[in-house]
Image 1 (tube, helix red, strand yellow):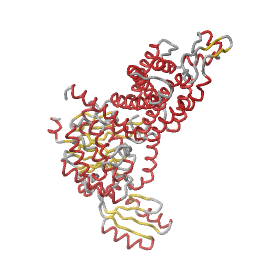
Image 2 (cartoon, rainbow over the protein chains, first blue to last red):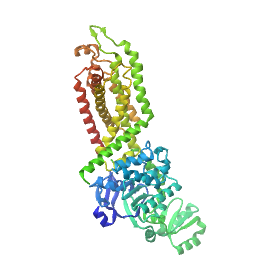
Image 3 (cartoon, helix red, strand yellow):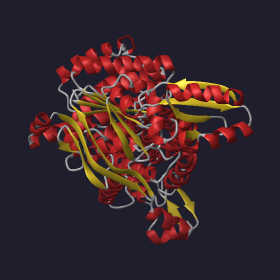
Length: 331
Length: 273
């Protein structure tokens, strides 16, 4: 505990690699999460985010490298590390036959929280995520957004210093997602905790203190959203050619500027002068054109050469496959 | 943290998981209905129905002299049946926990794997004993008199049996990936196990071993003798109606040893998983 306080780090991931059979899920991943920060791990599905989460919450051991949670080596002292962590998994993990309060009670008992403190915290946290009116309803009657809120509250019953949220907003509608983020930010501000959240929704990380972009098991970039935009953000020109011939002509002419070339559109790296010249010269060849100013989306595109949204269908398949194997990564 | 408080956390955790199991089961109407209807069917319908056909009679050269009625005879076996079904249902909840994510919540808690499994098995066993007690409520109809020592002895045997069977259920559940597979397995395991445990027909009310093999086909006698449940049924019969086919301690030893062995196996697999 002492050295964690000294180092000022909540989480330290040091050259962690993990291999599943032939796939290298994590390749020498390193990053640091400062205490009391809201840290986002951004990447498409299959990037290795969940594997990393499972290593941090001690369900998996890294093949090489070390992961420290509040200064504790997660692989060497899993039980001590777990005590510091509040975890919300991607898949719901509530007992749907128990009521809201009973789910929280169970968690408090399992983590050995003394009765008096347990009762008080349960009431506080239910109020915080606005589930007090639902305290006696069984979990199965809650909406998916409410279940998520309950899981977030549950992860804090044992006064965890670090909250790990694995895709907390996946599968929720836009409004509910906003609401979940509202609670996450409020919790972080009020309770003085560190939050590590994984997501593949770019717009969600704008509000985070630090972002770590990860793809195919590798860290591509790290920094605050503003820093990332400044460093990697680029003006992009999104061009929809009229015909295949136009497509080929444009692709040939600007080969050195092509960022992405798909059947429907070509994305070129650009600046103001280039955009104007392009429009003047190729106006007749294009059906549509849009200019994108630097955003985290363009950062991601620059870093990975593709858009994070391309993975949307894959995400659903993965979730389903995950369900099929029993939702376990413990094997 | 001191060693003592680590132990306390584990004990409280075991209690929490035990409580969850019991609460869940009591809220499961289907399970409760099964637990009530099964003894009624077996004791009140089948037992009373077959009661007149089961009495001292000359069968070939052998004479059955039976010191109890069929109802009394089948009564302890119905307790075993109820415990058997409920224990296996507890194992179904292992699959449920795994499929619906709850297991992960406890896997990342400060509880050790051993505590998690113990809480689960003790919870399942407690519910199974409660379901066994539902049968005891019908004792009056079966003409089985209950005294306090008798009840205590029965409860002890029921607890041992329930622990062993719940552990068995967990071991089976560890190897099954879907609910469907489990349904097949429970039919392939529960009923054969029950029917070959000298539960519904007396293997040997008064016959010698040699005579038994003349009256019943060899394979059936072998099956019954090899079935560990036979000895559990026998032990309960000894406690409730004072009739034992085998040494009364045999049942206790078999239940105790297999309970520990099965729990050990379940834990070994759970740790590895």
